[in-house]
Amino acid sequence: MGASDFSVEYYTYDDVDDDTELNEFSLREEDYKYKIPLLKRAKELNPREVKLFTSPWSAPYWMKRNGTISGTSHLLEENYQPWANYFVKYVY
Image (cartoon, rainbow, N blue to C red; front, side):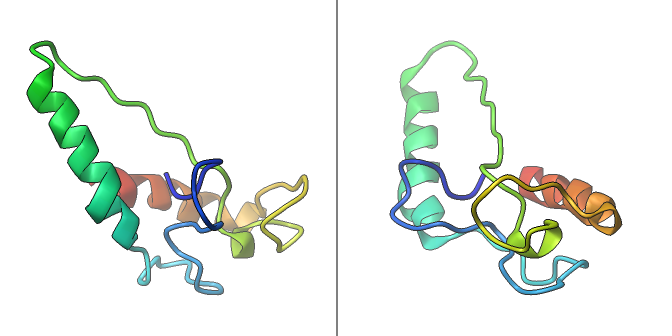
């Protein structure tokens, strides 16, 4: 869900400051070009049900107390709902 150790850069799916409505939420080109096709291919090749698990590397920096992409931080309380909505948008 967003960047990982295998990404060439850090990103989340909404890096627009204070976008609490998540109007700018979007998947990245690498998701459409690499990740989604790979998952679809795995599903085609596996006769059993493919189960997936996703976990974000980090919340968008603007949702966090330290306001940065790195370092230990916590989610700002006012962003609990936008963070929950972020998960919903990702799944659907």
